Image 1 (cartoon, rainbow, N blue to C red):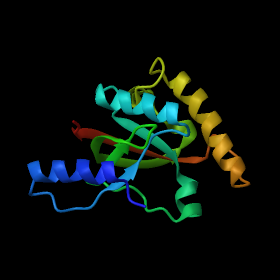
Image 2: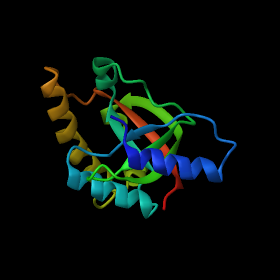
Image 3: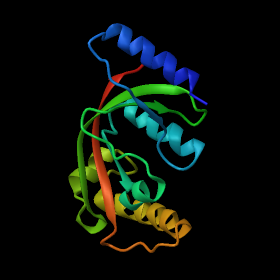
Image 4: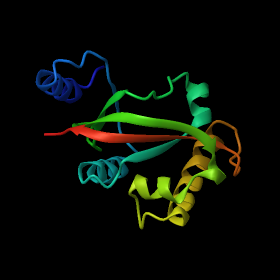
Length: 152
C-alpha cells in the first residue's frame, strides 16, 4: 500500500517545482518508531545530512542502490511524511574507513566517530546476524549524503 502522506507531500513539492519529473522513494531512518522520529527531527534541524546503510542488504533484498539525484520522502515513526531529501553523494567503503566528517554529518549523539562506530557496529551486527552473516571492520557500508529540499 502506498503512503498517502508521502504522496500528498510529493504532490505539494512538485506543484512548487514543476520542473521535477522524477519518482521518489519513501522510507524512515532507523529500526524503531522512536529512532525514526529522532532522526527525522535531526533532518528538519539541518543537523543530519548523511546516513549509512549495510551495503550487503541491498543485494540480499534486491533493493536498488541510492543514486545521486534521487528524491526520498522521509517518514516519522508514525509513518507520516515529514521531509523530502535529495541524494547528493553515494560512496561504498569498509566500515573501518568511515571518516569523522561522515559521522559528524549523520548528526547523531555527540557527532563523533567513536559514537558513530559504537552505534552502527551494533546495528549492522544485528542486521547481518539476521541474514546469517558476520560483521567485521571490512563490512561494506553505503554512505549517502543528502540535502533537505522540502518540508511543511
